[in-house]
Every structure is written in C-alpha cells, then in structure tokens.
Length: 120
Image (tube, rainbow, N blue to C red; front, side, top):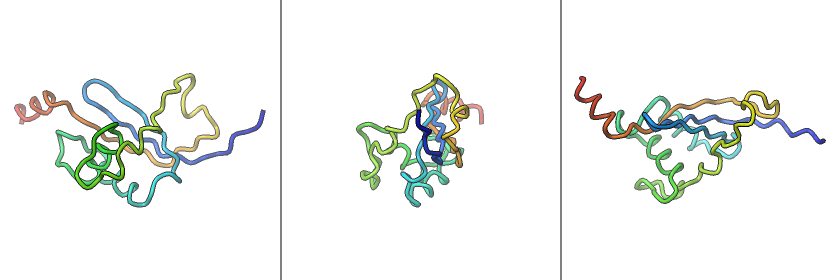
C-alpha cells in the first residue's frame, strides 16, 4: 500500500442554524489569495444575523448549486466538491491531512434572526 502525500487543508465549518453543520475540507492550493481574503471576511459571521459582506457573498455563491450573488458569478458552486462526507473515521485520524486554517460561518434561518431581533 502506497502512502498518501501529506496535504495542507482549510476546514470550513458551515452552519445552517438551527438545522445542520457541514464540513468542507479544501486543499489550500485550490484557494486563491482573494478566496482566502473572503474566508477571513466571513469568519464568525452568519447570513441573516450579521451585515452582509463580500466574504459572506462569496460563501453564499461558492456553496450554492444554482445561485450567485451579484458580482460573484465566477465562484458559483466552486467549493461544493470539497464537502466532507466520509465519517468512517475522524479527519484528525488521517495523517495525510494537515489542517492549517479553520473558518466558521453560515446561515441563520429567518425565524431565528426574527427571534434575535425581538430579544434585543
């Protein structure tokens, strides 16, 4: 059995609150400097709970199947292929995977943001 080459990855934790959490394991060499900039802008931000910025627009487009925010057409669906589906063992138990960046972002469903607005 040949060993796999060690690869550096960015882990994107995408939450759709309150329903689900998806993981995206993206090879660092597949992300441009501009895309890294967008990930930093979206860090700890949630659509429908925070002010929309270019980072959230990028993620909303890059994770969508058939949708693009205005000005982000070239990114439509570009991160979908990196969705982590293999739960046979923990990501960290795979020595060829080195996670160098972790980003958390997502989408708050409308009724949750309504409750947030009422409670403020």
